[in-house]
Image 1 (cartoon, rainbow, N blue to C red):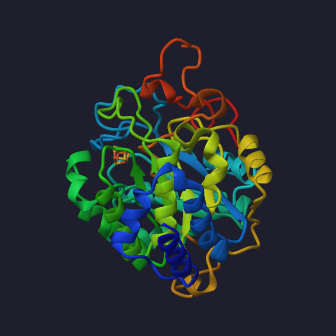
Image 2 (image 1 turned 30 degrees about the vertical axis):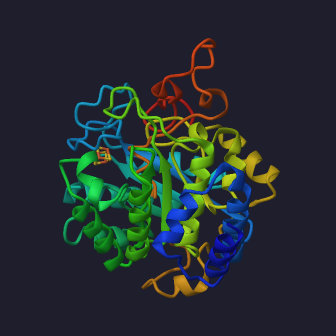
Length: 399
Ligand code: SF4
């Protein structure tokens, strides 16, 4: 074990990636070795990102009513999850929500809309929104996450001031058809490539915990490396009631950490982002994940509530990490040089962004899930708190 971890740490520090067998071996380490795995991957994280943590803030521009059938998603066709449903936020409403995130410490705002992909009119709306956000905060990075892109749309978003575009691969090519039938893995790959071709920083990640094998996880992370995503959001499935995966619950905090470590080894110098599901699946081990990921979403997710933004900041401080400021460029210099017209900020939704499907949770109070039900374990979907505040409501956002 020591030989494997030393070899992986040495490769990561040099910016080299492991073999597939080495990546698989990380996922198959025992709980006895967990801290050694975290320490080895932590060396890689420290080499490229120090103790900085980049904060990102989600603004859900349009929620629910999607015609696609992604099985993990609370916004999918036929979803019976009681999420907020609303059409496009006005640019000033979105800019106000974004400003709350920036005040909370976020240096990137991720503007997200449900749907298969934007119409040209939708791209015009989002362009106005991006301009409104940048008018208030010229320094803030904006990542758009609007689904599959048609010809010319990425270029329009770039001209409007978008820095990045998120479109997650979510799972391996071999299993993509098991989680979605209305579009293909290849559709997703080509949208990430379109974004990159337009000079947007590509952001693309995964959702773990959907019943995939270790090989599937390694496959999707190697695909993300091959796509050369600048940022890789790692979501853990939120089993929303009313979705086909409502009873899926196969993640432990230890496994979540091993997955994050594997992603860090395979993508050593890339922004690895803790995304939806961190609170419910990592629970009290969340601070250890900061040794692996260099980025996270502040506050709430698209359709679910995260732990209080203040608790995120306390966790970062208590663990000895620092929030990355606007003047610091996230990615190492050699990666920034690869991106055309990189103003220095863009890295790469939601990754998240499509934290969409994986909506998210609430830590602290809710992440233990249905604590009120003391005499039986919480069912998976009882651990998920649907978002009832922030964008699309009259209540203040969590930032
Ligand atoms: S993940 Fe995106 S495309 Fe799929 S159902 Fe959800 S909102 Fe629609």
